Image (cartoon, rainbow, N blue to C red):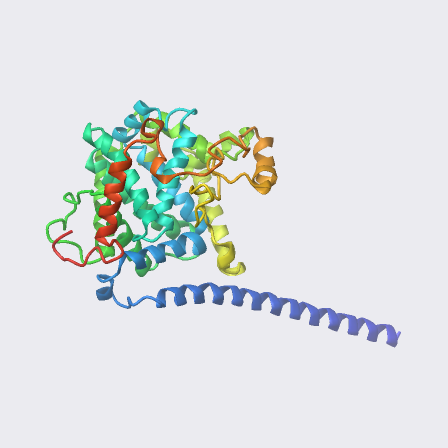
Length: 421
């Protein structure tokens, strides 16, 4: 009897020791995750010479680009990618923008919308993935400027439309990170967003005359970002109104956002998209509002994800950084996409792309998947990306604009000359 009691005590003691060791390892892992995540953030930001608000006025576009790219590729790839998609989506709540898209049928019909959407991603991806002083980034800007110029000349695109779109690409990632991620954006990172997109607006020759400090200039990217946000809110109050064109464009874009969702789940998925809208945007798009409980549960899901990442996930390693565009051209002098958000345009027809899990999944839900000879499988030529009506056009103008941008040396500080925004 005594021997059995001793054996039981030993087993109990061993179990308690194992439990304590397991608990200790678990706590240690949480501490490690937390420490490594914040250590990497501190180390990255400390590598730049911007310690105080006074230093921010000297931030270069090159540094702003690097900080922003770090956030997109390593720190918050999922949420920032969704934020950029939603930034584009939000512009369709402005009738002057959605009516143009409806008239051109570029983003309002299922035949054209997927390709037009990817072309837009390609152009934006080029100048967000490659340094502001690089030929690739400036060629993409030149191509974008040429396409816009055709509509600007006919009065179909206004400066306000361009400024509003620019504002959303600067603001939406910050908003989404603060609302949905494991940490908020720092002031230095916020300044980087403002600096980068101010420089982009300069390259697009967008007028900032409607901003409060247009006459005196902005001290830094934070100052510019604050005024752009202030202006965008007022613009939405007057111009984001319900319109049938908004809804038609939004419906096609929503279908693209839900490309990988099986049709049986569409009703639920549409409610999720609607829940992510604020009341003004939802009314402008003429979408029904989900219940308050449904909306809370959508954001609760993001908060649960953020809690898990903050405490239980190690930082994403460099070799797993999110990349959508190949860094080097292929043997044809074109560039491959590395990801395919909807139709598989511009993909390299590798075995994995054609026969991998994603291709089989797309086949199973009745979506196009990569195949040889289809969807521009040789890659893209950035000078020819865009609507079919512009195919092969504007090459001299693009070269001229690219040369002008390269000569400007866009890597420097866009606030270097106070009073000359």
